[in-house]
Length: 102
Image 1 (tube, rainbow, N blue to C red):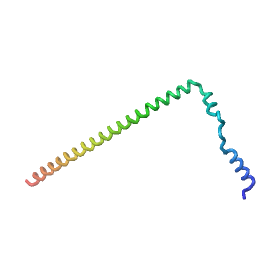
Image 2 (cartoon, rainbow, N blue to C red; image 1 turned 90 degrees about the vertical axis):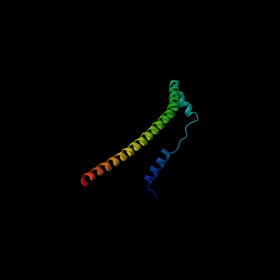
Image 3 (tube, rainbow, N blue to C red; image 1 turned 180 degrees about the vertical axis):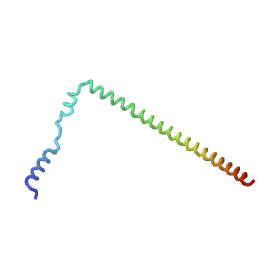
Image 4 (cartoon, helix red, strand yellow; image 1 turned 30 degrees about the horizontal axis):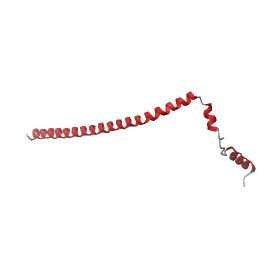
């Protein structure tokens, strides 16, 4: 069994945290205090966001595509460079072997 002090504390917490439904005209009251200018600015901001978010997504995807293409080109260039360096190394080794053979 809980001591009386803890029981009182628990009851107080329960009452303080109990859900209270807002009145029927709560939202009407809230928006009636909000000036019409603010409502218009909010609507304009929402429209701008609805337009800009998809544009931003399209731009992001285009940049991602260019990044992937640049990466593929870089890998191809590095493979070509590696191949040329291997051929050059083999040629130098052959030249050195010929000189050492003489």
